[in-house]
Length: 175
Image 1 (spheres, one colour):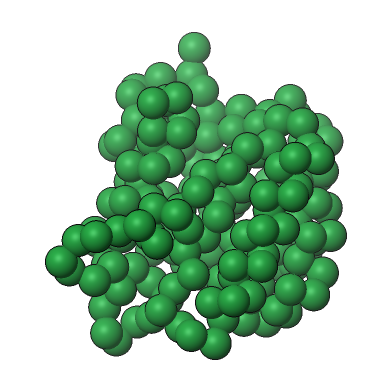
Image 2 (image 1 turned 60 degrees about the vertical axis):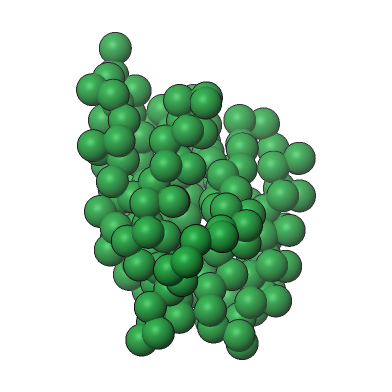
């Protein structure tokens, strides 16, 4: 039986080819990545009807960096709850909320931290919602090569994308 995973995200997912999950997961998993660079939770709410057509057992929401830049913390909780409620309204599915990395862009680090705290609160109040803590993985990284190239403080290098992919893989497989 195939387990269907759909990634709803922004450029972090899109530019990483869905964090490489198609090749990281066993054959019984089918991964669809509909991520769009620049998208916020508001953009996905405005385009939610396309999501309704995708049969999904597990939704991975990887959103927040663009929200932090466009809206700060204003309305993040309500938009995220609206999106979760929509995703779960027509299908019995699980939603993984991604605690996104704070990036190397100083101006949005605190906003991302606050929005990640909002996601933690949402997890406590919603059934069939869980957290994938990419934030902590990046914060505890001790490697010699920085996770972000000097030219791009928001999008990690391949090491960062690999850390994200492995974290999702382990969460999905329960290891």
